[in-house]
Image 1 (spheres, one colour):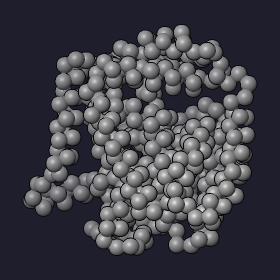
Image 2 (spheres, helix red, strand yellow; image 1 turned 90 degrees about the horizontal axis):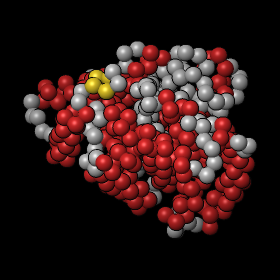
Image 3 (spheres, rainbow, N blue to C red; image 1 turned 135 degrees about the horizontal axis):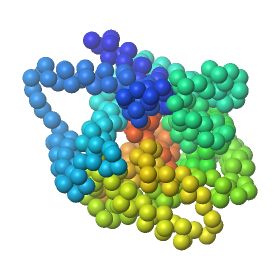
Image 4 (cartoon, rainbow, N blue to C red; image 1 turned 30 degrees about the vertical axis):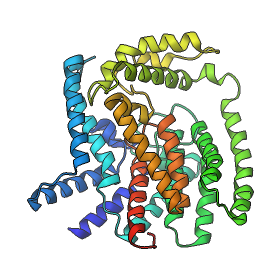
Amino acid sequence: MRILKRILVFLFLVLIPFQDSILQATPLRFAGSSLSVVPLTILALIYFSEWLLRGVYDIDRRALIGSLYVVLVTLLNFVVFGIQSQGVNLIVKAINVGVLLILFLMPIFSVDYSDVDTVRWGVLCAFFVSVVAVLLGDFGLLPQLIQNPVFHNTPIDDLRPRGLAKESSMLSLQIVTLGLLAMHISTSKVGRMVIGVITALLIIYSGSKGGILTILITLLVLPLLRRALSWRQAFAFILIFVPLGFVAYQRMVEQIAGNFLSETTTAATRLSVAVCGVMTVLKHPFGVGLGGALPAMYENLPRALEWVRLRSPVPLNFSEVNEYLFSSTNSGTKIMFLEITIMFGVPAAIVCLYFLISLIIRANRENFVFLLIALVASSIAILTYVDGLILYNIPLLYGLTLYELRKRQNTSGRI
């Protein structure tokens, strides 16, 4: 069983880059976006079976309180919204979202990362897969191998690189997290340097405005967190990232040139659903539960659209977000933190912020520089522009950071 679990952990890691798979065309739907869901689900069943066979049904108090809160809020909002919305069964919807949350939390709190070789090679292989996918699919070396229905269930809606992810913003976060994790576990200084340069170049190449801005903000924040930079570190920082920052800026200007805001649907959609989310939270400060996000959106989105339309200084393209009023497909705020806050309210928002800030502080204290950069970048991403429930590179980062911090308490070694 131990060998099987190691194999499943390795497969979970290697398959993380595959974030737009054909499994979405099965009954799994959105849950099947990532191929990592398969080994992760098997691991969940194994862990649950072992827990049952142990005969000692101990449950962490915080997990119990959190679970009871989620169930209570969900049941109360079935009373508020009913169990049907736009032809969608909200009970089934709640179960699906609940499973997604459990699978997202597993790599943070349950997956065993103690096997050094499994984790090292799994992360390195995952990063290698991400890089090769961009080279083959987006750079044009062998596009038919990547740009096909097996690896991409989502139609291409722009020409920006996306690797094996749904879109360029997800690709940029995938490259950042996997690249920095690979740098953290690498035992070679030259290897770290090579991985770092590849990571930076691919972020710029991705063309993701959110990804590029996130990295630039992270690099500005890092010296403030790392006040004790040596002169060598400071020189390396300037030598590497200032030129890359300039190139990134030029790349971003190219992306937003012309009548970008008027032509693209992205700005109008993200602004409208974000305002809708804020309105929902103000109306339901303790959340709408696992099944209430959809009817809450239908309730508040018309007002949000009007609010954005009246206050926007430039004309916006609302064609995409207008479709949300008549379809449950792809509806959501596209911001993970806001989604969590909508479902579980202000208490969940406080818990999430505390978790992220404490991880960043502890990683900084323990001198985990690469993990620190990844944590700051991923935190900015999930707070502003990424919906990450199917992006398992995010919980992998948090889970490995927690493991490293626990390990540091007992030894000075690393993975």
